[in-house]
Image (cartoon, rainbow over all chains, first blue to last red; front, side, top):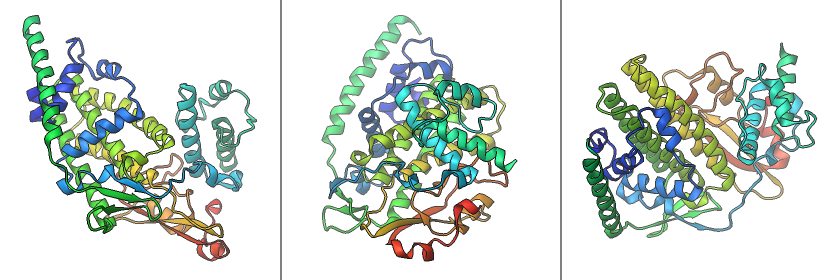
Amino acid sequence: MTNALVRAGIGELDALLIYKKLQSGLVLTGRNALALLPDLSDQEMIDDARIGWWSSPGVEDQYNRLLDADPEGEQEIEDPLSVYENLPLTQWPTWLLERLYQESRNRWQALSERSLPDLPVEKSAEPVMDLLGRIDHPYPDHPAAILRLYLDSLEGKA
Amino acid sequence: MTEAEFRDLLAYADKHLVHLSSKAAEIPTPPGYTYDRNTHRYRRQKGGQFVSEKTIFSLLDTNEQAVERSMNRLSSALLQDTLSESEWFLAMDLQLRRLYVQNAALGAGGFGEITPVAFRRLNAAYKEDRQRLVKFGEAINNGSLSESQIQNRIKMYVGSARVQYWKSIPKPKHRVDEIVVERRVLGEAEKHCSWCVHLADLGWQPWGLLPEPGESSASWDDGQCLSNCRCKKQSKAIKKRRLDKVVTKKIGAV
């Protein structure tokens, strides 16, 4: 089993890790395998990605340590939405609202652990609004508020 | 396989993992790097030279190509029935997840510079791709995709991961009387999609408004290259009083 993975280009260590995940012997499909995957912490994802970077045939040895770079200077963590603060959302083109909805949805989902549909959402708008609560949300970056703008924008262009 | 054989194999796997881990610790490491948060550039610790933008893009390309080759080989093995769908899925997932994080790290300035906000964004995008990966595996397994369709689909997954590179690049530093602008620059391609041409035509725009290369729009129905996009983005800080001279096209007027 692991030999097949190695022949397909997966490193020996990774092949063994995959094999260990499949040790129940009952995992036959991708869907079964998906259910096996734990939610990794940010640090676990970094540790794993680092292994992949060091072993990647696409990365020359001299750049193995590039992504372990020591930072110099102060880090500025900016609110990702600050850029939108002073802009009249109603005047935005649809694609920009789509992008804003996508970002808002991702943040909101991460906080609430509830799933929201991707755009276009005309058909699912009503249940989404129910799920999100009030449409006139006080926070302009809330998915419900952006969804409303998006739907208005579609209506205005129809 | 009998239960006893299965247990032997697991014991072998455990021993092998320990052996490989100890071996990894013995590997001599090449000289390190620093990341300058002011200029947002990598610098070699030995000698202090900056790593060129060309090198960063070359690393993005070669690492992606390696992942793409591996994903193609895995998919051929699934097609030829030498891998099970579950093995294929776990191996593909591993490759893709790593690429997402590596690209984000490359843009952010290293693994340690990926912010929690960036991780939430990355996770959301990656989990959507992971769901698509399940369906992709089923489609390969039931023979409904040709080899070229499989290769194209893999290219798209790899391209989706590249978006994380662009999204993780920090906003350039600027003074109080300055504002940061950005523009889309068309990449090398025989023919550009109308979406990218439109975005490039908008010229300089306030930072954060333009979609990243590879991001698509559901409302743009005139053709998009999607995650095959090889465009780039440039940004710079300008004096606020020059904004009207630099940003000459209003996005809202589109």
